[in-house]
Image 1 (spheres, rainbow, N blue to C red):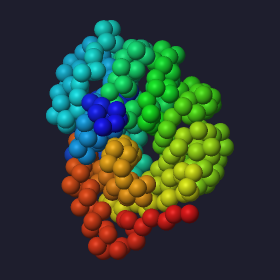
Image 2 (tube, rainbow, N blue to C red; image 1 turned 120 degrees about the vertical axis):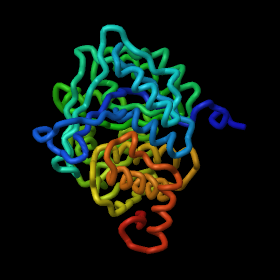
Image 3 (cartoon, rainbow, N blue to C red; image 1 turned 120 degrees about the horizontal axis):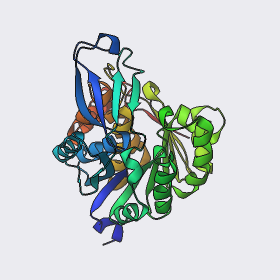
Image 4 (cartoon, helix red, strand yellow; image 1 turned 30 degrees about the horizontal axis):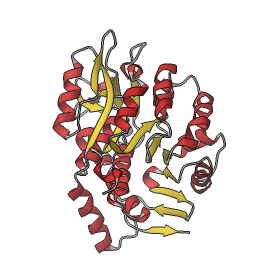
Length: 329
């Protein structure tokens, strides 16, 4: 049996865990909100939840503040089946809050309220290397390179795991400007196996605009073996040395555009672990994203493997041309 097969976790994600604050059931814009509901959030944390809901052995390496939200984060992760051994609180810091604006559900707003020294800055390179050693896939985000201390920890693990996924995960609140992120990514991309991002993120990474196809091929030339560009309601596109694969989006009545990309990422990992073809990987990832877009919340909205399989099968039976067509070139 290979070393990869005997590792304790299918995927370990690294990065922020936040508390998402969503408007109450009848409200969308902050100006009309009378109450908020809190959910577990943070992109890499959501990906771990998505992977666990998909049936994978998932863990997250993260930090919280030394505050009332620490227990909430741990309890929620355990509820979703994510291992919490690497979730610790940081004295003197505070858990990040993210306030969501759903006035336009397809393009929701998100404002972060972060401590001057966010808890994930306390991550250490040795800890990331240890986590990578027991994971078949390690998932990092570009946001992890936004501060010098966190970047040092992330740099330490580059090139260590065989399967290293980088989510471009651009958050304007975390960077001085887009040029900073571009410069940082130039040194990171040659060390990753897979890179995933939306059109804006891909353009930042490459420093030039382009069509989705041009961006995917451009990312591929920076070093990864697989480059995926997420297109929202238009689906997704992936490039390898064998060509470009396109996946249409599955129809969905959008309730919340947040979290769909994290569900997509969780099922990309599912496909890697299961040995699916790239086309099947994209089909299931797109289906997972559409399910989450139709629900409120991120972590709580992540679908089960059965839900995703049912949506894919229904689209195949209908031959609708919107949810399962894959075009290769």
